[in-house]
Amino acid sequence: MERRDFLKALGAGAAATVGATLVSCDNDKGGEKPAGSMTYRVNPSTGDRVSILGYGMMRLPTVSSQASAREDGDAEIDQEMVNRQVDYAIEHGVNYFDTSPAYCRGRSEHCTGIALSRHPRDKYYIATKLSNFNPETWTRKAGIEMFENSLKELQVEYVDYLLLHGIGMGKDGMAEFEARYLNNGLLEYLKQQRAAGRIRNLGFSYHGDIAVFDRALAMHDVGEVHWEFVQIELNYLDWEYADEISDRNTDAVYLYGELVKRGIPAVIMEPLLGGRLTHLPDPLTRRLLARDPEASVASWAFRYAGSFDGVLTVLSGMTYMEHLVENVKTYSPLVVLTEEEKQMLEKIGGDLVSYRTIPCNDCKYCMPCPYGINIPAIFIHYNKCRSEDNTPEVPADSVADRRVYREQRRAFLVGHDRAVPRLRQADHCIGCGQCAPHCPQRIDIPRELQRISEYVEELRRHPN
Image (cartoon, rainbow, N blue to C red; front, side, top):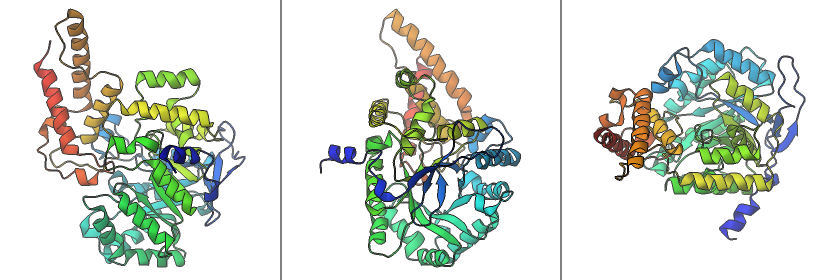
Protein backbone atom coordinates (compact mmCIF):
# COMPACT_ATOMS: atom_id res chain seq x y z
CA MET A 1 0.00 0.00 0.00
CA GLU A 2 1.30 3.46 -0.86
CA ARG A 3 2.02 5.74 2.11
CA ARG A 4 -0.68 8.25 1.17
CA ASP A 5 -3.27 5.47 0.86
CA PHE A 6 -2.15 4.13 4.22
CA LEU A 7 -2.70 7.56 5.80
CA LYS A 8 -6.23 7.68 4.45
CA ALA A 9 -6.95 4.15 5.66
CA LEU A 10 -5.94 5.19 9.16
CA GLY A 11 -8.43 8.03 9.35
CA ALA A 12 -10.26 8.88 12.53
CA GLY A 13 -12.77 6.07 12.09
CA ALA A 14 -10.51 3.31 10.86
CA ALA A 15 -9.35 1.74 14.10
CA ALA A 16 -12.53 0.13 15.38
CA THR A 17 -10.74 -3.21 15.55
CA VAL A 18 -8.81 -1.97 18.56
CA GLY A 19 -12.01 -2.21 20.56
CA ALA A 20 -11.59 0.91 22.68
CA THR A 21 -15.31 1.52 22.41
CA LEU A 22 -16.55 5.09 22.74
CA VAL A 23 -19.32 5.59 25.29
CA SER A 24 -20.67 8.58 27.18
CA CYS A 25 -22.16 8.97 30.62
CA ASP A 26 -24.23 11.54 32.45
CA ASN A 27 -21.87 12.54 35.20
CA ASP A 28 -23.78 15.04 37.31
CA LYS A 29 -22.40 14.91 40.84
CA GLY A 30 -23.21 18.51 41.68
CA GLY A 31 -21.09 21.61 41.26
CA GLU A 32 -20.34 23.24 37.96
CA LYS A 33 -21.32 21.02 35.05
CA PRO A 34 -19.29 20.66 31.89
CA ALA A 35 -21.04 21.15 28.57
CA GLY A 36 -22.60 17.71 28.13
CA SER A 37 -20.95 14.67 29.70
CA MET A 38 -17.51 13.11 29.66
CA THR A 39 -16.73 10.67 26.86
CA TYR A 40 -15.32 7.28 27.85
CA ARG A 41 -13.48 4.49 26.06
CA VAL A 42 -13.53 0.84 27.11
CA ASN A 43 -10.28 -1.07 27.44
CA PRO A 44 -10.94 -4.43 25.72
CA SER A 45 -8.49 -6.28 27.99
CA THR A 46 -10.03 -5.37 31.34
CA GLY A 47 -13.31 -3.65 30.53
CA ASP A 48 -12.14 -0.44 32.24
CA ARG A 49 -14.30 2.56 31.31
CA VAL A 50 -11.60 5.19 30.95
CA SER A 51 -12.24 8.90 30.50
CA ILE A 52 -10.98 10.16 27.14
CA LEU A 53 -9.28 12.98 29.09
CA GLY A 54 -6.44 11.70 31.25
CA TYR A 55 -4.80 13.84 33.92
CA GLY A 56 -1.01 13.98 33.46
CA MET A 57 0.63 14.69 36.82
CA MET A 58 3.92 15.89 35.31
CA ARG A 59 3.50 19.65 35.75
CA LEU A 60 1.78 20.17 39.09
CA PRO A 61 0.88 23.63 40.44
CA THR A 62 3.41 25.24 42.76
CA VAL A 63 3.23 27.79 45.53
CA SER A 64 5.87 29.99 43.89
CA SER A 65 5.58 32.22 40.85
CA GLN A 66 5.16 30.75 37.41
CA ALA A 67 8.60 32.04 36.41
CA SER A 68 10.33 30.29 39.30
CA ALA A 69 8.47 27.04 38.65
CA ARG A 70 9.44 27.07 34.98
CA GLU A 71 13.03 27.91 35.79
CA ASP A 72 14.12 24.68 37.35
CA GLY A 73 11.05 22.79 38.56
CA ASP A 74 12.33 23.01 42.14
CA ALA A 75 9.44 25.00 43.61
CA GLU A 76 7.22 23.59 46.33
CA ILE A 77 4.13 21.83 45.01
CA ASP A 78 0.85 23.39 46.07
CA GLN A 79 -0.83 20.31 47.54
CA GLU A 80 -4.03 22.16 48.34
CA MET A 81 -4.40 23.19 44.70
CA VAL A 82 -3.54 19.68 43.52
CA ASN A 83 -6.34 18.38 45.76
CA ARG A 84 -8.81 20.93 44.42
CA GLN A 85 -7.99 20.14 40.81
CA VAL A 86 -8.15 16.39 41.34
CA ASP A 87 -11.51 16.85 43.07
CA TYR A 88 -12.82 18.87 40.13
CA ALA A 89 -11.51 16.33 37.64
CA ILE A 90 -13.15 13.36 39.36
CA GLU A 91 -16.38 15.29 39.89
CA HIS A 92 -16.52 16.00 36.16
CA GLY A 93 -15.77 12.48 34.97
CA VAL A 94 -11.97 12.26 34.70
CA ASN A 95 -10.81 8.94 36.12
CA TYR A 96 -7.33 8.30 34.63
CA PHE A 97 -4.33 9.83 36.44
CA ASP A 98 -0.83 9.38 35.04
CA THR A 99 2.31 9.90 37.12
CA SER A 100 5.89 8.65 37.47
CA PRO A 101 8.69 8.44 40.05
CA ALA A 102 10.60 10.85 37.78
CA TYR A 103 8.01 13.63 37.62
CA CYS A 104 8.32 16.87 39.60
CA ARG A 105 11.74 15.90 40.91
CA GLY A 106 10.36 12.70 42.39
CA ARG A 107 7.42 14.33 44.18
CA SER A 108 4.56 13.67 41.78
CA GLU A 109 3.62 10.20 43.03
CA HIS A 110 3.51 11.39 46.63
CA CYS A 111 1.30 14.40 45.85
CA THR A 112 -0.90 12.35 43.54
CA GLY A 113 -1.34 9.71 46.24
CA ILE A 114 -2.43 12.31 48.78
CA ALA A 115 -4.98 13.83 46.41
CA LEU A 116 -6.46 10.56 45.15
CA SER A 117 -6.53 8.72 48.49
CA ARG A 118 -9.28 11.12 49.58
CA HIS A 119 -11.60 9.42 47.05
CA PRO A 120 -12.95 5.85 46.87
CA ARG A 121 -10.44 3.57 45.13
CA ASP A 122 -12.96 2.47 42.48
CA LYS A 123 -13.41 6.07 41.28
CA TYR A 124 -10.02 6.37 39.57
CA TYR A 125 -7.33 4.52 37.65
CA ILE A 126 -3.69 5.17 38.48
CA ALA A 127 -0.99 4.87 35.85
CA THR A 128 2.63 5.05 36.90
CA LYS A 129 5.94 3.98 35.44
CA LEU A 130 9.11 2.07 36.10
CA SER A 131 11.33 5.10 35.45
CA ASN A 132 14.71 3.42 35.84
CA PHE A 133 16.68 5.76 33.58
CA ASN A 134 19.83 5.88 35.69
CA PRO A 135 22.15 2.89 35.08
CA GLU A 136 22.42 2.53 38.85
CA THR A 137 18.76 1.45 38.85
CA TRP A 138 19.08 -1.20 36.14
CA THR A 139 19.31 -4.12 38.57
CA ARG A 140 16.33 -6.30 39.36
CA LYS A 141 16.56 -5.31 43.01
CA ALA A 142 16.49 -1.58 42.24
CA GLY A 143 13.55 -2.02 39.86
CA ILE A 144 11.54 -3.95 42.45
CA GLU A 145 12.28 -1.31 45.07
CA MET A 146 11.10 1.41 42.68
CA PHE A 147 7.83 -0.43 42.01
CA GLU A 148 7.20 -1.07 45.71
CA ASN A 149 7.94 2.56 46.53
CA SER A 150 5.42 3.68 43.90
CA LEU A 151 2.70 1.67 45.66
CA LYS A 152 3.71 3.25 48.96
CA GLU A 153 3.78 6.82 47.64
CA LEU A 154 0.47 6.38 45.80
CA GLN A 155 -1.12 4.79 48.89
CA VAL A 156 -2.52 1.86 46.91
CA GLU A 157 -2.26 -1.92 46.93
CA TYR A 158 -2.25 -2.21 43.15
CA VAL A 159 -1.51 -0.09 40.08
CA ASP A 160 -4.10 -0.01 37.32
CA TYR A 161 -1.66 0.82 34.50
CA LEU A 162 2.09 0.20 34.81
CA LEU A 163 4.45 1.32 32.04
CA LEU A 164 8.04 0.59 31.14
CA HIS A 165 9.04 4.24 30.90
CA GLY A 166 10.47 5.73 27.73
CA ILE A 167 11.80 2.68 25.93
CA GLY A 168 14.02 3.65 23.00
CA MET A 169 15.59 6.61 24.76
CA GLY A 170 19.32 7.01 25.30
CA LYS A 171 22.37 6.76 23.07
CA ASP A 172 21.80 3.06 22.37
CA GLY A 173 18.07 2.50 22.75
CA MET A 174 18.11 -1.25 22.19
CA ALA A 175 20.98 -1.95 24.60
CA GLU A 176 19.33 0.17 27.28
CA PHE A 177 15.95 -1.51 26.77
CA GLU A 178 17.54 -4.90 27.27
CA ALA A 179 19.59 -3.77 30.26
CA ARG A 180 16.68 -1.99 31.99
CA TYR A 181 14.01 -4.66 31.61
CA LEU A 182 15.11 -7.90 29.96
CA ASN A 183 18.58 -9.02 31.01
CA ASN A 184 17.84 -8.40 34.69
CA GLY A 185 14.55 -10.33 34.68
CA LEU A 186 12.56 -7.24 35.63
CA LEU A 187 9.94 -7.71 32.92
CA GLU A 188 9.34 -11.24 34.18
CA TYR A 189 8.88 -9.84 37.69
CA LEU A 190 6.29 -7.33 36.41
CA LYS A 191 4.42 -10.11 34.62
CA GLN A 192 4.32 -12.01 37.91
CA GLN A 193 2.96 -8.94 39.68
CA ARG A 194 0.28 -8.65 37.01
CA ALA A 195 -0.70 -12.27 37.56
CA ALA A 196 -0.90 -11.55 41.30
CA GLY A 197 -3.22 -8.59 40.71
CA ARG A 198 -0.81 -5.89 41.83
CA ILE A 199 -0.62 -4.62 38.23
CA ARG A 200 -3.86 -4.68 36.26
CA ASN A 201 -2.56 -3.50 32.87
CA LEU A 202 1.03 -3.69 31.65
CA GLY A 203 2.37 -1.51 28.84
CA PHE A 204 5.17 0.83 27.81
CA SER A 205 5.75 4.40 26.70
CA TYR A 206 7.88 4.94 23.62
CA HIS A 207 10.40 7.59 22.62
CA GLY A 208 13.18 7.47 20.08
CA ASP A 209 14.64 4.33 18.54
CA ILE A 210 11.99 2.72 16.32
CA ALA A 211 13.80 -0.62 16.44
CA VAL A 212 12.96 -0.84 20.14
CA PHE A 213 9.28 -0.11 19.49
CA ASP A 214 9.20 -2.85 16.85
CA ARG A 215 11.05 -5.25 19.17
CA ALA A 216 8.55 -4.71 21.97
CA LEU A 217 5.61 -5.35 19.64
CA ALA A 218 7.31 -8.44 18.23
CA MET A 219 7.49 -9.78 21.79
CA HIS A 220 3.74 -9.27 21.99
CA ASP A 221 3.24 -11.09 18.66
CA VAL A 222 5.00 -14.27 19.80
CA GLY A 223 3.36 -14.31 23.24
CA GLU A 224 6.49 -13.40 25.18
CA VAL A 225 4.51 -10.61 26.82
CA HIS A 226 0.99 -9.25 26.41
CA TRP A 227 0.76 -5.47 26.28
CA GLU A 228 -2.66 -4.21 27.37
CA PHE A 229 -1.84 -0.67 26.21
CA VAL A 230 0.99 1.43 24.76
CA GLN A 231 1.67 5.13 25.26
CA ILE A 232 2.76 7.10 22.19
CA GLU A 233 3.10 10.73 21.11
CA LEU A 234 0.31 11.67 18.71
CA ASN A 235 -0.82 15.06 17.47
CA TYR A 236 -1.48 16.70 14.12
CA LEU A 237 2.16 17.74 13.72
CA ASP A 238 3.69 14.38 14.64
CA TRP A 239 1.17 12.41 12.58
CA GLU A 240 3.20 12.82 9.39
CA TYR A 241 6.02 15.24 10.20
CA ALA A 242 7.81 13.94 13.31
CA ASP A 243 10.67 12.60 11.20
CA GLU A 244 11.05 15.97 9.46
CA ILE A 245 11.48 17.74 12.79
CA SER A 246 14.09 15.23 13.93
CA ASP A 247 15.55 12.24 12.13
CA ARG A 248 15.40 10.39 15.45
CA ASN A 249 11.61 10.68 15.80
CA THR A 250 8.92 8.46 14.26
CA ASP A 251 5.71 9.59 12.61
CA ALA A 252 2.64 8.85 14.70
CA VAL A 253 0.88 7.36 11.68
CA TYR A 254 3.28 4.42 11.91
CA LEU A 255 3.15 4.03 15.69
CA TYR A 256 -0.63 4.17 15.83
CA GLY A 257 -0.99 1.91 12.81
CA GLU A 258 1.13 -0.82 14.39
CA LEU A 259 -1.01 -0.73 17.52
CA VAL A 260 -4.21 -0.89 15.47
CA LYS A 261 -2.97 -4.02 13.70
CA ARG A 262 -2.60 -5.76 17.04
CA GLY A 263 -5.70 -4.41 18.77
CA ILE A 264 -3.63 -2.62 21.43
CA PRO A 265 -5.25 0.57 22.80
CA ALA A 266 -3.14 3.72 22.59
CA VAL A 267 -2.64 6.20 25.40
CA ILE A 268 -1.69 9.57 23.95
CA MET A 269 0.95 11.88 25.36
CA GLU A 270 1.89 15.36 24.16
CA PRO A 271 -1.34 16.20 22.31
CA LEU A 272 -0.21 19.84 22.49
CA LEU A 273 3.52 19.18 22.11
CA GLY A 274 4.29 20.87 25.40
CA GLY A 275 2.12 23.85 24.45
CA ARG A 276 3.52 24.37 20.95
CA LEU A 277 0.13 23.56 19.42
CA THR A 278 -1.50 26.10 21.71
CA HIS A 279 0.73 28.99 20.65
CA LEU A 280 0.66 28.66 16.89
CA PRO A 281 2.05 31.33 14.56
CA ASP A 282 -0.51 34.08 14.01
CA PRO A 283 -1.41 33.09 10.42
CA LEU A 284 -2.18 29.51 11.50
CA THR A 285 -4.15 30.69 14.53
CA ARG A 286 -6.26 32.93 12.31
CA ARG A 287 -7.03 29.96 10.10
CA LEU A 288 -8.53 28.07 13.06
CA LEU A 289 -10.40 31.09 14.38
CA ALA A 290 -11.93 31.64 10.96
CA ARG A 291 -13.21 28.08 11.07
CA ASP A 292 -14.71 28.39 14.58
CA PRO A 293 -14.29 31.70 16.45
CA GLU A 294 -15.55 30.12 19.70
CA ALA A 295 -13.10 27.21 19.76
CA SER A 296 -9.68 27.58 21.39
CA VAL A 297 -6.57 26.58 19.50
CA ALA A 298 -5.89 23.92 22.15
CA SER A 299 -9.34 22.37 21.77
CA TRP A 300 -8.64 21.59 18.11
CA ALA A 301 -5.52 19.63 19.09
CA PHE A 302 -7.34 17.72 21.83
CA ARG A 303 -10.18 16.84 19.49
CA TYR A 304 -7.67 15.60 16.93
CA ALA A 305 -5.95 13.25 19.40
CA GLY A 306 -9.23 11.93 20.75
CA SER A 307 -10.88 11.34 17.38
CA PHE A 308 -8.97 8.11 16.67
CA ASP A 309 -11.05 5.10 17.66
CA GLY A 310 -8.06 3.19 19.00
CA VAL A 311 -7.20 5.88 21.56
CA LEU A 312 -8.02 4.92 25.14
CA THR A 313 -7.22 8.28 26.75
CA VAL A 314 -5.45 11.56 25.95
CA LEU A 315 -3.11 12.87 28.63
CA SER A 316 -2.83 16.54 29.51
CA GLY A 317 -0.51 18.06 32.09
CA MET A 318 -3.01 20.57 33.49
CA THR A 319 -1.07 22.85 35.81
CA TYR A 320 -3.83 25.44 36.11
CA MET A 321 -7.50 25.07 36.93
CA GLU A 322 -8.54 26.99 33.81
CA HIS A 323 -6.78 24.42 31.63
CA LEU A 324 -8.58 21.60 33.41
CA VAL A 325 -11.96 23.30 33.04
CA GLU A 326 -11.45 23.93 29.33
CA ASN A 327 -10.23 20.41 28.60
CA VAL A 328 -13.13 18.85 30.49
CA LYS A 329 -15.47 20.94 28.37
CA THR A 330 -13.75 19.83 25.15
CA TYR A 331 -14.28 16.17 26.01
CA SER A 332 -17.75 16.48 27.56
CA PRO A 333 -18.64 15.10 25.15
CA LEU A 334 -15.93 14.72 22.52
CA VAL A 335 -17.10 15.94 19.12
CA VAL A 336 -15.17 13.70 16.73
CA LEU A 337 -13.50 15.57 13.90
CA THR A 338 -14.82 15.22 10.39
CA GLU A 339 -12.38 13.91 7.83
CA GLU A 340 -12.19 17.40 6.32
CA GLU A 341 -11.34 18.94 9.72
CA LYS A 342 -8.71 16.29 10.32
CA GLN A 343 -7.06 17.05 6.98
CA MET A 344 -7.19 20.78 7.74
CA LEU A 345 -5.24 20.26 10.96
CA GLU A 346 -2.70 18.01 9.27
CA LYS A 347 -2.18 20.75 6.67
CA ILE A 348 -1.55 23.21 9.50
CA GLY A 349 0.93 20.73 10.95
CA GLY A 350 2.78 20.68 7.65
CA ASP A 351 2.82 24.47 7.51
CA LEU A 352 4.11 24.62 11.08
CA VAL A 353 7.16 22.56 10.11
CA SER A 354 8.30 25.42 7.86
CA TYR A 355 8.77 27.68 10.92
CA ARG A 356 11.68 25.47 12.02
CA THR A 357 11.16 25.70 15.74
CA ILE A 358 13.02 23.46 18.19
CA PRO A 359 10.89 20.41 19.12
CA CYS A 360 11.09 21.04 22.89
CA ASN A 361 8.07 19.86 24.90
CA ASP A 362 9.19 21.48 28.18
CA CYS A 363 9.30 18.07 29.90
CA LYS A 364 12.45 19.16 31.81
CA TYR A 365 14.05 15.72 31.50
CA CYS A 366 17.23 17.60 30.53
CA MET A 367 17.28 19.41 33.86
CA PRO A 368 19.05 20.26 36.06
CA CYS A 369 21.98 21.46 33.99
CA PRO A 370 25.24 21.18 35.99
CA TYR A 371 26.15 24.67 34.77
CA GLY A 372 22.84 26.25 35.70
CA ILE A 373 21.49 26.75 32.17
CA ASN A 374 17.71 26.91 31.90
CA ILE A 375 17.45 24.82 28.75
CA PRO A 376 13.63 24.61 28.38
CA ALA A 377 13.12 28.34 28.97
CA ILE A 378 15.69 29.20 26.30
CA PHE A 379 14.02 26.94 23.75
CA ILE A 380 10.51 28.10 24.65
CA HIS A 381 11.39 31.78 24.18
CA TYR A 382 13.15 31.08 20.90
CA ASN A 383 10.19 29.04 19.61
CA LYS A 384 7.76 31.75 20.64
CA CYS A 385 9.70 34.36 18.68
CA ARG A 386 10.00 32.07 15.67
CA SER A 387 6.25 31.44 15.71
CA GLU A 388 5.54 35.17 15.93
CA ASP A 389 8.00 35.90 13.11
CA ASN A 390 10.13 37.87 15.53
CA THR A 391 13.61 36.47 15.02
CA PRO A 392 15.20 39.41 13.19
CA GLU A 393 18.11 39.18 10.83
CA VAL A 394 20.69 41.95 10.38
CA PRO A 395 18.98 44.24 7.86
CA ALA A 396 19.86 45.59 4.45
CA ASP A 397 20.50 49.30 3.98
CA SER A 398 16.95 50.62 3.66
CA VAL A 399 15.67 52.90 6.42
CA ALA A 400 12.42 50.93 6.71
CA ASP A 401 14.27 47.64 7.11
CA ARG A 402 16.52 49.07 9.82
CA ARG A 403 13.55 50.45 11.75
CA VAL A 404 11.75 47.09 11.71
CA TYR A 405 14.98 45.34 12.67
CA ARG A 406 15.56 47.63 15.67
CA GLU A 407 12.02 46.99 16.96
CA GLN A 408 12.25 43.24 16.53
CA ARG A 409 15.76 43.08 17.94
CA ARG A 410 14.75 44.94 21.09
CA ALA A 411 11.63 42.77 21.55
CA PHE A 412 13.67 39.57 21.20
CA LEU A 413 16.50 40.59 23.56
CA VAL A 414 14.26 42.13 26.23
CA GLY A 415 11.97 39.09 26.14
CA HIS A 416 14.98 36.79 26.23
CA ASP A 417 16.44 38.43 29.36
CA ARG A 418 13.03 38.37 31.05
CA ALA A 419 12.46 34.70 30.24
CA VAL A 420 15.98 33.57 31.14
CA PRO A 421 18.32 35.29 33.64
CA ARG A 422 21.72 36.13 32.15
CA LEU A 423 23.59 33.54 34.18
CA ARG A 424 21.27 30.80 32.91
CA GLN A 425 21.45 31.64 29.19
CA ALA A 426 22.87 29.54 26.38
CA ASP A 427 26.28 31.22 26.27
CA HIS A 428 27.18 29.40 29.51
CA CYS A 429 26.91 25.97 27.85
CA ILE A 430 30.27 24.19 27.65
CA GLY A 431 28.94 21.35 25.50
CA CYS A 432 29.29 18.61 28.12
CA GLY A 433 26.32 16.79 26.57
CA GLN A 434 24.93 15.50 29.87
CA CYS A 435 21.45 16.72 28.89
CA ALA A 436 21.06 15.21 25.41
CA PRO A 437 20.58 11.50 26.27
CA HIS A 438 17.58 12.37 28.47
CA CYS A 439 15.65 14.25 25.76
CA PRO A 440 12.59 12.28 24.52
CA GLN A 441 12.60 14.39 21.33
CA ARG A 442 16.25 13.48 20.64
CA ILE A 443 17.24 17.15 20.34
CA ASP A 444 20.97 17.81 19.98
CA ILE A 445 20.74 20.20 22.91
CA PRO A 446 24.36 21.46 22.99
CA ARG A 447 24.23 22.22 19.26
CA GLU A 448 20.95 24.12 19.55
CA LEU A 449 22.19 26.06 22.57
CA GLN A 450 25.33 27.04 20.67
CA ARG A 451 23.24 28.16 17.70
CA ILE A 452 20.98 30.31 19.90
CA SER A 453 23.96 31.72 21.80
CA GLU A 454 25.60 32.79 18.55
CA TYR A 455 22.34 34.31 17.33
CA VAL A 456 21.81 36.30 20.54
CA GLU A 457 25.40 37.52 20.47
CA GLU A 458 24.97 38.65 16.86
CA LEU A 459 21.90 40.69 17.83
CA ARG A 460 23.77 42.29 20.73
CA ARG A 461 26.66 43.27 18.46
CA HIS A 462 24.41 44.85 15.81
CA PRO A 463 22.14 47.42 17.49
CA ASN A 464 21.30 49.07 14.16
